Image (tube, rainbow, N blue to C red; front, side, top):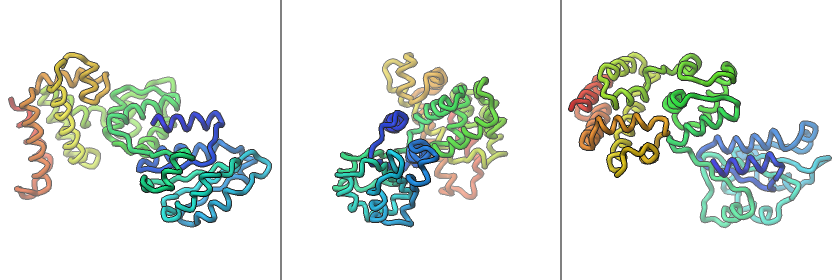
Length: 336
């Protein structure tokens, strides 16, 4: 994200590069930069003659370069944005001479989504040397909460850490999807009030009491009654609470506890947060859970979850009920 921030900062300060090559498997950051250039570099009076958006499927590199070599009309710059540029992969070599001597009044942007060009190729090396080259990668799950809070801060909102957890657990790591939900939330919620779990429940439809983070917390506290309540809620709302996601969350939870058990200083909140990959706000939950589940219980829990996952796929059992499998696994996990 630091590379993205630096690029956006330069753009806001009108420090433009002749060529931007934006590639990678995370389309959100590619869109963020290309949309900013499209919306902000030229004013409305300049765009008619000096801004062009073309698509890789519908053009050739020869046509792109022919347009890039033109001079702007009554403007300091012209902007050419090539969307779906990955469809020009076989023609990238034709960029070589232009990259070395680009038209200084042209801002040429390639939005090369979902993949990257061959890093060993000459043209890729030239792009990295002479262009603004961004490889946009998906965020790790433990980095997504910071993205949520940062994006909301940009929009003028504050959010409760528990509300952030709910969003990340429900929406996963798809930044485009997350951004869409945050934009919808911004339309209905006042900037004067923080976004709380109740706000998320009321506007996005995620239960603040019955979700995977609350399940992990209840297991960590050995709260058998609450665990069963949450599992029963999941069984009644399977679409909103897919079995595979719950399995992954529980597996991750016990892996985190194992990491804590390997530490020398388990009572240092900052060290525990770093080892477990959680926000310091939630570190006490991890410390409590690690005390309730010694290392051998964590190891057993991981084995039980693996066995449950295998059974859920029909191996060694017949038409297994997913709720029953989950209840059975959790009863065994919490039995000491």
